[in-house]
Length: 190
Picture (cartoon, rainbow, N blue to C red):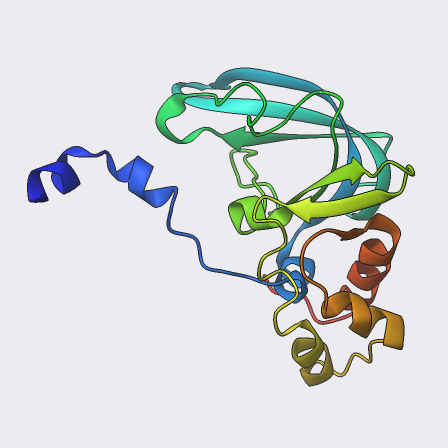
């Protein structure tokens, strides 16, 4: 068993170690909060650093809640282990609609979702055409403690916002975005 532990690359283990965070934390910590459709994904080395593999993701912006106001937003994310995950469960699919809570770009221009999959929400439509949103964990833990966090920051949530914060699983996109806007009035975490 010890041989297996020491032979598995550290970068692989690091992919599984993520501190659980809730929507309050995501809203306070993210340097960029954007809703948009993925229009381009390119896998390429970081400019000036051929050994660092990245993906450059461009979104057509529907709403920019925090960050530069423009019709498109592009960010570059480091690929742990230098490999791109492709296929249905790849990190970003062209044409998919998402809401991303991204870290502010680093000095090298790299960014990623806060809390990895916790800060990356995919938008899906039900048979009636309503849009629902869930992150990579199916929103498990996303709303834990949100009401308490807001109250401790002096932010009062409306009855409908409290109801959203008590749900589990996918939630309606418009209600989710309304809650995020309210949570963004809390002091930022740098």
